Image (cartoon, rainbow, N blue to C red):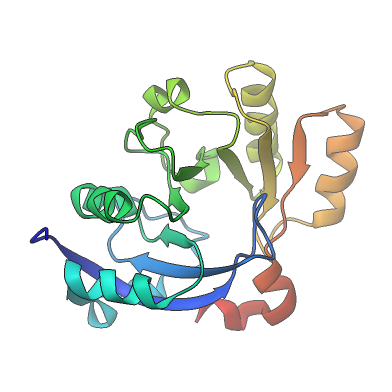
Length: 213
């Protein structure tokens, strides 16, 4: 058994709130630490240092074994703990893993049991996107553009129209409280963005700001 450890914010069972698998129950493993500071981040409180726990790989394995659900590894940025994450993926080849990443660190096509949920950072995030990831994206992976304002929207539209995204799942997701779903709804239709889906975050629609605490 590997000697890896994880820096973890929380482990819990809940419903996936976004993307093509929204509505399915999952086991969430939220890893601590991020290499970006997006102003709209909805997990700032959960990632504060005092909430971080160092957990042995064997303990995480036991938690996965107890759950009947497939796994979502999120953060923070999970690939800052890449070795431990991939060791867990290899430990459970019959489990499906959805790994949510901010797109700054290169992903891999190595694992058949991994679905990538990849952000492409828009201007308001003040982040960046690792273009090497474009060669690793498969049709079953999903891409998310978080939209705060028209500048973000224009950036996302230009990126989609470039033809670089080889996936069936592309989402424009409005920042809760800053961008209106209705505005994006109308704009996607009027712009004839036939490959784009309007992104929802079910947990925020149901629980509002409480889902960020």
